[in-house]
Amino acid sequence: MPIIRVTLLEDFASSQQKSEIVQELSNTLANVMGEIVRPYTYALVDEVSSGAWSIQGGALMTEEMMRAGIGTSNQQRALRLTEQRVRQAYDVLASGDRQRIEEYWDKDMTWLVPGHNQISGLKRGLDEFLSFMDKVGFLTDNSFQMSWDRVLITGDTSVDIRHNTGHRAGDETRRLDIDVVHVLRWHEGKVIEGRGAIFGDGTAQFDEFWR
View 1 (cartoon, helix red, strand yellow):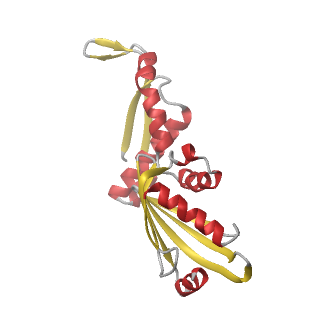
View 2 (view 1 turned 60 degrees about the vertical axis):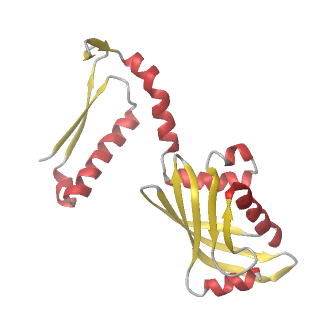
View 3 (view 1 turned 45 degrees about the vertical axis):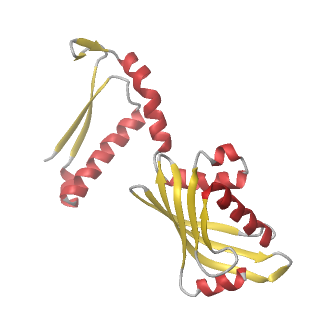
């Protein structure tokens, strides 16, 4: 029966944080040893009263730890790669707020658009990427939409599966209706590299739509 214990100063972690700690510890052990150990794994968070913990001969106080570390802890949690952060990154693009956009998209990012048409190719830097997005809006009279299917995350990489629709500006008979995948690589909470992929015969439709 595996037992995993973590000891923290009293009140240094919130109830939600402690819940996440025990869940992630259990998940990590199961990933290493196999799912067979999960039903028998106990993960515990112990708390020590403020002042009852000594480092280098001095008593460690919860207040001191909060001042020294909680700011960094909150920042790291805010930048952690989650499905919510992936969705927020796309949402801010529609806001047009450059300051907010730069919180999610690195200035030196790259973005690779598949296919062989006027919007295909590698976009270098945030400025070129945003210009590409503006061009997509212009060419579709802002009808272009990306609906969500799901988001997958592994390490520093996210994968969002989307369904793209729209029509060309001035010609609603020229329509786009395809499934796509975007693979994003992240660093310190920001997208540094993105690339798109299209399923099946969607590639031919994609090129025809943007020609």
